[in-house]
Amino acid sequence: KTKAFIFDLDGVIVDTAKFHFQAWKRLANGLGIDFDHEQNEQLKGVSRVNSLKKILEWGNTSVSEEEFIQLMDKKNEDYLTYVDAMDESEILPQVKEKLQLLKDNNIPIALGSASKNARRILDKINLTPFFDEIVDGTNVTKAKPDPEVFLVGAEKLGADPKDCVVFEDSIAGIQAANNAQMTSIGIGEQAVLHEADHTFQDFTEISDEFLIKLARI
Ligand code: B16
Ligand code: MG
Image (cartoon, protein in one colour):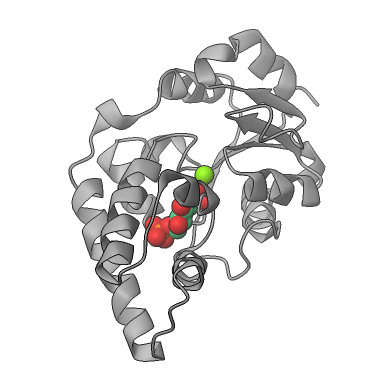
């Protein structure tokens, strides 16, 4: 028996933050609201609904419930034009190699993402077959830092939460993993993700030996 590994999608497997940025910026600017990279950072790991709420707050703007839904749909439609142009070249360095290593060692793998577009993205980049289970924004109601997404992943894999390792790029995601009593691995800046058990800039910094050791119970 080994530990089970759970991967976040956006920011860990692919860099879709740049597409979210373009789509949110266009939407915000259309409403007369400024939107910069720093604000985009704050939307990492945050659900679509809560992202729009934040943008409207930043712009001191309020809209009707109907318009809110229209705006979300518009943003997503725009975002999906970028997603649909994605291919395997969008997979971040060493991610596919590490997934293959885990597969070769019979280590269970799940996806744990806030995105409702997760399956579509995995299909575009041809990584779907690597995942034993997929938990995404269509399966959960409570947003990170709530541990729900990772706890459902553990349950689906038949793993004890304490025997799960989570890879995350967002602060909320690291907190979600910690709240689930899982081992948290931050992908990004150590200064930002200091609550993680371990942090790496990206997967090129993680050795095969480290991963295999991590998988031992
Ligand atoms: P969607 P993750 C998150 O994905 C993104 O980091 C976040 O920026 C986005 O708003 C959220 O998914 C919802 O995405 O609009 O596609 O449903 O990092 O949890 O994989
Ligand atoms: Mg993420």
